[in-house]
Amino acid sequence: MVLAYSGGLDTSVAIGWIAESTGAEVIAVAADVGQGGEDMDIIKKRALECGAVEAEVLDLKDEFAEDFCLPALRANALYMDRYPLVSALSRPLISKHLVEAAERYDAEIVAHGCTGKGNDQVRFEVSIAALAPHLRVIAPVRDSDMTRDKAIAFAEANGLPIDVNKRSPFSIDQNVWGRAIETGFLEDIWNAPTEEIFSYTSAPNAQAEPDEVVITFEKGVPVALDGQKMSMLRIIEELNRRAGAAGVGRIDMVEDRLVGIKSREVYEAPAALVLIAAHMELENVTTERELARFKRGVDQRWSELVYDGLWFSPLKSSLDSFVDSTQDAVSGEIRVRLHTGQAVITGRKSSESLYRYDLATYDSEDVYDQSKAKGFIDIFGMTTRLAAERDRRRGK
Ligand code: ARG
Picture 1 (cartoon, rainbow, N blue to C red):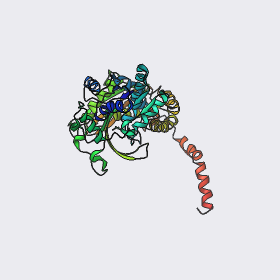
Picture 2 (tube, rainbow, N blue to C red; picture 1 turned 120 degrees about the vertical axis):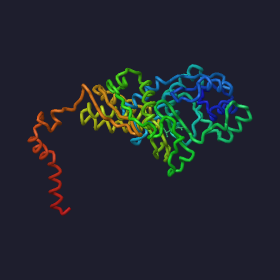
Picture 3 (cartoon, rainbow, N blue to C red; picture 1 turned 90 degrees about the vertical axis):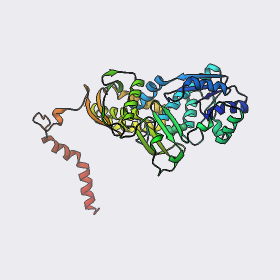
Picture 4 (cartoon, protein in one colour; picture 1 turned 135 degrees about the vertical axis):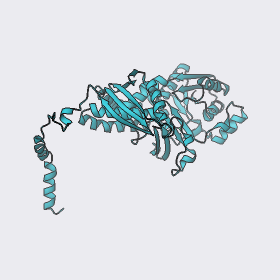
């Protein structure tokens, strides 16, 4: 069996728990998607000490940035107009590597540590079903009654090398695209978040001076910051640091989970929010109106599909083709001012720009023929006028 291993209490206990209840040999696979925190070698060692027959640590940061965060950016992916899909993006990537590990070790079962109340269980299982329909999936926390108390008792009885007191009262999931903080006192939706729950962002007033950054895009791909070429991963890391220092990227929302629950979620996603705002603005400058209007609907649908665990699905794949086809002219530079928790766009520049000064200006260089507007409006408004006249006759 291959287990998606995080190094925390639940998945550490799951190793022995699964081995005891199924007799399977457990291969622990830990994915580094830029969550920071503990050293990955320590996590690997812990898996082995907890009874895994093999443990692998996979550095997936670049793949995550390029194959998951980048498509999300090109689709301006914000679920419910706000959440940049942090966890929803990492699950299909981790699933892909669990499936590959299962093939390498000839495993028949894949296990994950999700509960039965969230979206992540769906994302893992639907992704695995899409990639390897023959694999069986088990979730000990959800399916075999591995409650928190039992997990702690199991860890203590078996002398597992985990400090059960070090657990935070929050459920946190983080990667380079952002950080999700749930549960604890946040479950009362009247309670404001306190400063110490944040780690990717400083308080909005912490930095006295504004920071200004210029982001260069080529065909919808961010390629440089302040003129310096960088990989997608570096750009995300840099912007997390700079925007985070200016307090940019905090989100506090009530969210509709796929399983029907409304839940309170606090996020920090400095780079994701800055990049999406900049990318959207460059699209405003370079994308023809009808295409732009239609794409907004596609972007929203794309976000919902990915949120709902359908990364590997026919519709998502076709929408990807559409989004790709819209990015050819999305090239240029966007200047963003980062200050007091806000990312404000202050400049745009593009060789593919559809903005025409000579059409927009009210100065003497104006080439737009205003006399044509009257006839345009007469005909454009005709159906509305006809319907209004008819309804007046009917006394409506
Ligand atoms: N609500 C978010 C989502 O469904 C975040 C989930 C975070 N997962 C966690 N185990 N804390 O994408």
